Length: 188
Image (cartoon, rainbow, N blue to C red):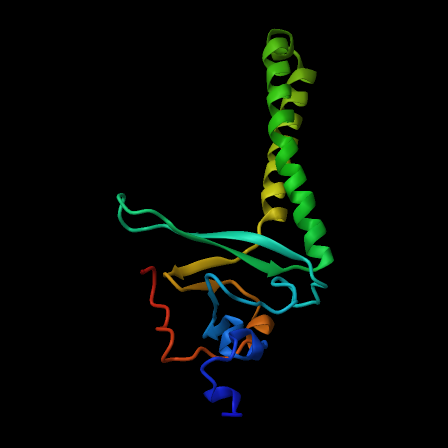
């Protein structure tokens, strides 16, 4: 009974490492498969594969259901993220958060001053410039803050994720076939 693999009373945490099935992540072709509950992803950036140094970001993943009566399948996964991508994400979230109130205030100001601005070339130039800057702030805010990964399938135990960097996938162990059925689309 000295062999750890035959000990039924051994804690599952005793054998966890990045390549064991207990770590909770695998590769399935171009997909990253992650357990929904108990998983341990490598401490690397999901976007560039650099070291994350303990930093992570929570991402809510949702797969819409085919039926109107059923709910979306969703889960929250924590991914490692490097300093550069974390700064980029934070600046995008900042742009997104201020563009709404600034746009509402400026829109109110334009409505109040509309009769005077309508008949002046300067007013039309200011209005077009404002709308362009406002649209650019929203666009770049969304672009900078979004992590470009998406779930393909979420079931009761696992999540299949696409858009993960190939170098990140390369280090993940292959999927154990008896435990997990391959991703074929949205299902439960």
